[in-house]
Image 1 (cartoon, helix red, strand yellow):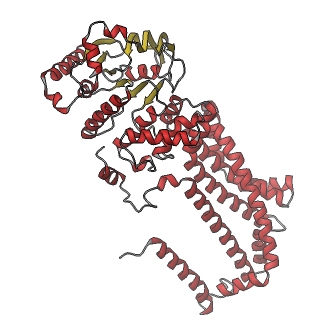
Image 2 (cartoon, rainbow over the protein chains, first blue to last red):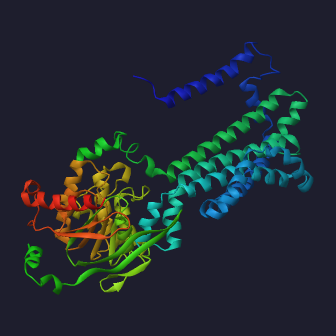
Length: 269
Length: 269
């Protein structure tokens, strides 16, 4: 029997962590390049006040940046995707802006908002905003018009069409955009902390890098890794829960994925 | 048998109330190269309780005509009365609509889809459940209420659509090529099922199709439309007794009717 992909993934992860521990210990790489996993964890434990504080600052910035990115993104994306005039006017603009390396604007953000949290929040908010706008607009556009006609035939008013049809129908695309936008907001916060800051995990990375304190750099990296993996897992589970209907039957009841076979097996038509 | 008896008596038809009256209806739409007349001089009365089928070549506007009867589109000129009152906006209390395919909401279960028109109207939960369950039974899907559309076969989906169209108990059911996407066997089964449901509910049905066999098999009366601009060029009474059986398709009466309709369509295309 072939092992499940999830099992293989876990084994690979365990192997990777094991290598992280063994490679520096066996002297295959100097500790300056790669401090062992146990030393890195040791740094986190011993300096938990410093790292805990940095994490709190970063989390605060990430949460606010995500709120800006997702809130403004959904709002503007819905308008752009829902109204064809606005779409024709603005969608190309947003698509092009998405391709711009927005990090070049970061110096301007610090000039306007200072080196504190505000500039990080604003920068990361803008950074995460574009994928949310684009996917929300795409989600609105891709709504099957038949659904709206059917809803109208059943007497749905315009607000009801929006809450009962437009929102659930565009949900899959919008959620995928939120996941991407949220991930970009984390990247935006970390990057901006690394560039110009006085607090946060990104700041710790660049601070200890300049003094060649590898274990402390890796401790911060480990924290960032954990943060983004955790966010992704959270976002995915939310997505799964909100879109449970898509996988219903295949997952829960262990029924075959080929829907036609089992559906027609029970009834002639 | 009631219906057939009524029809064989001269004058009985006039005495019955018209469920739908279409008078001097025309429709002109704005195409790329100016105005295109889509429907022209359509007048028809659909007697309450009858099964009327509209056939015609593709693009003749038969679906447009049906959408106008549903209040989903406005004719350019002419009037449509349903139960003696004009139908300007969709009114699910008077008219239920069953669409071609894929108009079920994929994020709702079969039962929730059937409940949708009732929940739009704000009907209490218990009443909704009761009505929807009754409809599920009527269409032969008892026990399948918790399934999502993607877990149902094509025929079962259309059964759910029919249940949804009937859940508010409207006197009229409009059906827009509801079985067009089904395979031939399922289509025959569904036609037969539809006649059973119709005979149990005493609805007036207006059914659009491009299958002549389906038309003759189902109808009391077949209306034949010409290509654009769509006009009604023939009105064929189907005198076959009810309940209809598959064997009737092999009879001379069936063959002659089918042939007559076919010749009429061929003449104008």
